[in-house]
Image (cartoon, rainbow, N blue to C red; front, side, top):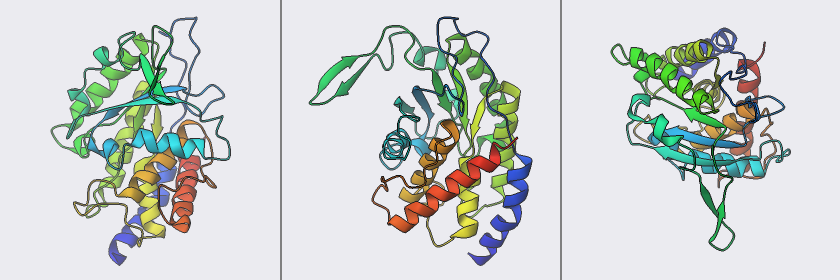
Length: 278
């Protein structure tokens, strides 16, 4: 563990300074009547479709944890949104049919609120943003890395043709392979630059937390999937990165020790601020 901590500590400052990415640009294909949505801007996403795999659905689903953490933050209105999660076990981005997911009046057409009451959302486009992630090693795999960049572009084009902004969720290294951090960070940052898409630096937040508090387990025993703390850190990084809302002080801890939750909130905010610094 001491060796891993040293590796994380030495690489982290270089990674954060080298991987800065600017916010998304205005989608030229969005209909003029629709609001222009930018992550981390004064007009951030208000409806997000999460598209990924088991890294997203562990621990009652990332989108649910993001919602709860955002609602309990010190600035809940800034991060107010609705969301839907669509995940496939083991999936890469090329497994997902984004064209179908984003069809008008399809996914997200209605929600359940209160005592099982059905609320129909306004007709037409149901999401203003889509959060995309690839399989855990696809962006750095010698065979599949080309597919990652191909589908990052394809899905970005498809999303914007529907008036939806793409975002990429940077995933984390395996616990026993910390050297994956740089490759994943570089790949997601490059995909963000190529497609003018916002990147959420969850993988760098994992490395930062491991460097500071290796005693906090971010992984389940398979050394790949997130523990409750790992999912919480990812959710806090989403709140910090997408809405530029500081998660520190959020009353939602997901059942974690208050001090552990506070540490994860702080790491998420610090990592996001440094990654998105111009």
